[in-house]
Image (cartoon, rainbow, N blue to C red; front, side, top):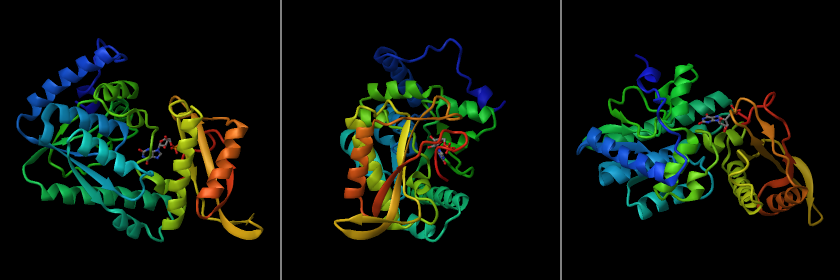
Length: 330
Ligand code: XMP
């Protein structure tokens, strides 16, 4: 029997939309996790994304410090993300959290690599190496927590991606999986996350690719251009939040391509990168439409990004739907 057949959502399962339904689900899963794991230890790669965060919060509720979370900072995270993961999970939820600063390790490996597929491969492989090294330092781990959600299972059925790709874990990991949210759709995961007390900024977070900002710094990644991506992304998120667009627009981000153009600041010539803004809406990610921005917001973004981000002298808006363009640039 395939993974899909083993993990079919029962037709009788109600869609979770209310706090009461979420609390009933949490109670049910807490018992199920305790029954599965007993006094065993569970390891979880906590990226800070919605699915792994909700999975971690459920596991903490069920088994407390029998859960070991590993948060790997690969240097391609958004501004403030590692800090938020540490604040929420270690300081507020009291999780047993190992924070791995692997920034130099990843960026050194990526130096000079400009092929998109090779970049993705390096990021994925390095992540597994770092995670496996951390796992090897720990004793008595028998279980691997994963924030697999139902669309991942449906995609594994259609051959779009293998289920173990969800957390990207290597096959040789001989751990039994604990996947408490695997029958939930994304909107339900969010309702459960809120009921578990996770902050809205974490629960309502927009989709973020595994290779992170690496795919938004096209070509060979340099630290200064990556920083320009991170800083401009932070400004974009701040301005979208102020304009009431956070949580309404499906996905929005900045890209800093590897070419420069002439500009002028305080009467002096500059020669700097452009920053491209992309903001899109979709229901299925197969077809994507462009969010049309208010001109006043565009003006503010151009002013702030050129004024506050080192190395940027021009702001462009990508108004291409998918198809023909993909969402990400690499
Ligand atoms: P594309 O660029 O394929 O993106 O139109 C569609 C959606 O998928 C996200 N994306 C990824 N997510 N790992 C992920 O977890 C990846 O390697 C990856 N690449 C793209 C993208 O952000 C968009 O939401």
